[in-house]
Length: 189
Image (tube, rainbow, N blue to C red; front, top):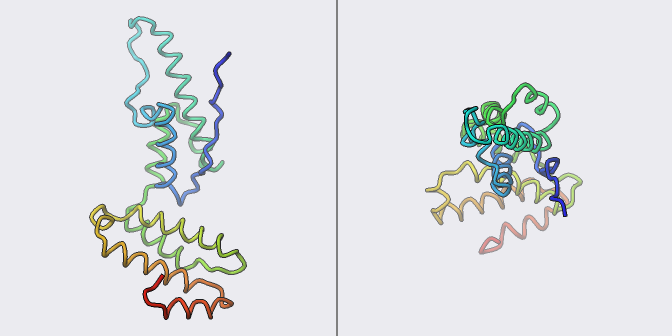
């Protein structure tokens, strides 16, 4: 039985310029599962000592794995981003470029996510789809928080109350009665 060729395997999460933090988290975990994360970190460097035993085999194996990882990365980014990567030969170069291009300061990322949350409106979506979209933004925002905050229970309670307020504010006007009922409940759900 032959081994399965997974070199064209796809990552379901695509980098789209706004979600670098989450994309890099998903991609690193995927690569850890494939025992290939050392290619993006640069710790698995291209063999460079021609006198080494089996040098040709080592080079071939490195180039094969490096190409697999580059393919996986290309399959998980938008086409316009992928086109920027074509001039790089190593996974580490590709990874570093993406990090430079799409890493925002925490403050800038927080600002953008808060703007996106405020702009999100229920409109004609189902409640489930709307909640999923808002939850995605909340999760990205939570990734920008310091460890001290995420370990502090009163902060977590306050954050969840804030999420409920944001969700209720963005609900379609058809839900005004439900919104009022929830706001006047004690304790708040």
